[in-house]
Image 1 (cartoon, helix red, strand yellow):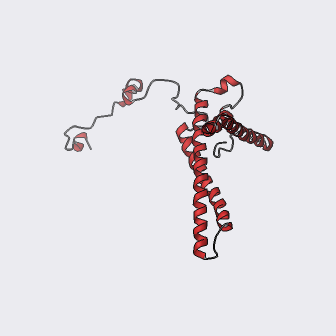
Image 2 (image 1 turned 120 degrees about the vertical axis):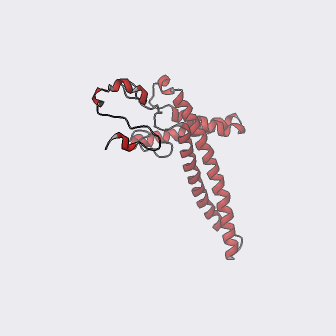
Image 3 (image 1 turned 45 degrees about the vertical axis):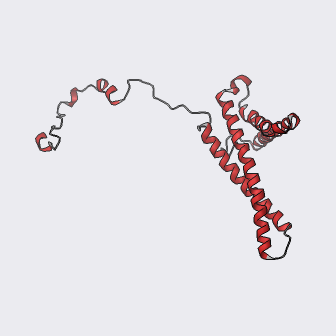
Amino acid sequence: MSNREFEGDAGAPLPDFTGASNIQLTTIAPALGVGSRQQPDYLDYDQKGRGIVVTMFANTGMSYLLGIGGGGLYGLQRGIASTPSSKFKVQVNSILNHCGRYGSKAGNTLGVFAVLYSLYEGLGDNLELDRYSGFDSTSPPLAAMMTGVTYYAPSGVRVAALGGALGLGAVGATYTAYSLVGKPFGSYGFLWF
């Protein structure tokens, strides 16, 4: 077969590669988008390998679902305990009302906590607070403290300080539990920790 047989509607013959051994790859590499660098090109990523927004969405979704489930179970218990009648339809209505009330309230609260925590932790990672403090990971405790302070700030300074202390204590308890188990902090990769 010759090049003339492959001339299609375009009318241009196919190139002849019989002398391809004379082609220098370094001269055509830039035309193909390949640089002449010796070092490989790596993507930039944060410490956990995920961006702030991806982490925020994952944490918020998981927290919201856990809140809906936990609040729904609590609502189920409260609905059964406080049913005003022995009729089946009234009992089902009472259970559904309580599950919806407590489930949505818990889910929304935990979802807001997760959004605030993820944003503060991402801010701490971007500012590289670990460099200034000397500790391995200062972003999670600081993020938890700031989440508590921000969430309870409309209630006053004392309540906001208590909320920050509770957030800091929760991460401190998590650090302690991880060290007792013998796992490094953040090795599970589940939810926030």
